[in-house]
Image (cartoon, rainbow, N blue to C red; front, side, top):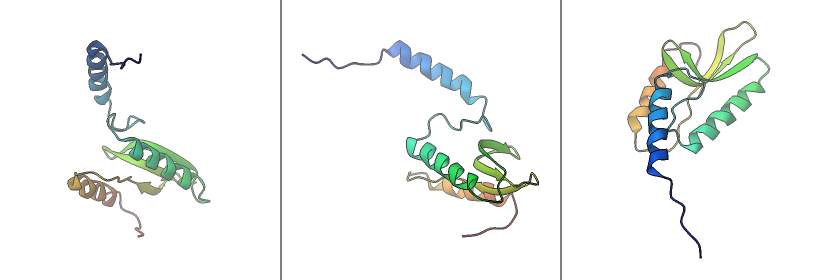
Length: 114
């Protein structure tokens, strides 16, 4: 006979309380939004790994605070300047988040490519 395992409500409440405390540490907490989908986390990892392979990149940071905003991936040049910055977009019903991310990246300045 198989039994369904259910998470105890006390465990869920403890998790929610802990997440509330952890979220106070954002932005730039090195972890990002605690409720991000796995697709976003994988995309962030893949973008970071791709940027690490660029010849003009010295260091890559994920979920870093830049100008008070958390950027998914920031890649630094050998001179210590931001060479690349990226926001990972996944399917959602929140189209304003895409616009917000675009504006966040636009405020960083620098050259743009499409």
